[in-house]
Length: 249
Ligand code: GTP
Ligand code: MG
Image 1 (cartoon, rainbow, N blue to C red):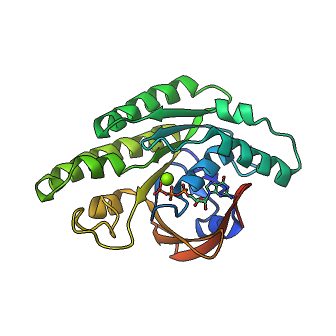
Image 2: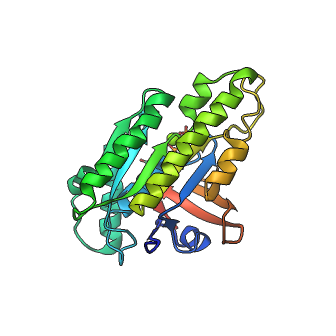
Image 3: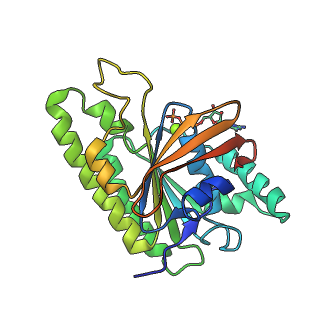
């Protein structure tokens, strides 16, 4: 068994709550409402994983399975510039963009297949200077939610999501990589979608994702992240800010 790596988030409180950072060999789920900051956290980790261990990273590259077309290269540039200022060093954002491999998933079947492609790419890069140390699925659940509507299909949806998550856990183990998945929830019950105030995947996701984080808006650029499930860490809350520089204290 390989040494577990940790990717720093950019926020000290958040790191401490996570026992140092987002762990390799595990799935971390971040769920929250529209605009709560899930994609921002994903972008920040895509930058930070590339940093050296002393700088809070894993010297790795990242694969993003983007299901909603929300990956923004210009946002990566801002975050790299923020990190360069913070560390007092020069960083080339184009180098960072080269180490972010983005694949768009057009539907849930395609999304599941992309994990196999991710595995192939990770094997190719295994002995390079930037092995894949992070796989992001943003959003894990959007396609599943859109494609499986109505009670009759819930069991099918759960089964497919479960299979997908097993593929992701396998990726995490075989590559000593962190896996981050996002999951949108709504604040109010909605008759059409069943109970969207609960993250979809519910029970099964709860048992597969090793770490579960709930993120919500607070005042201004502040966000509150709550660790609601972990194998070894106490529940806790952390306050972070989403600024031009990215995720900060
Ligand atoms: P859904 O995908 O819709 O469920 O939302 P999400 O949780 O992924 O939200 P996202 O991470 O996209 O957060 C959007 C929020 O992040 C915005 O409302 C802003 O508050 C903040 N944000 C996004 N981009 C920037 C930026 O370039 N600069 C700053 N300062 N804040 C940003
Ligand atoms: Mg998002």
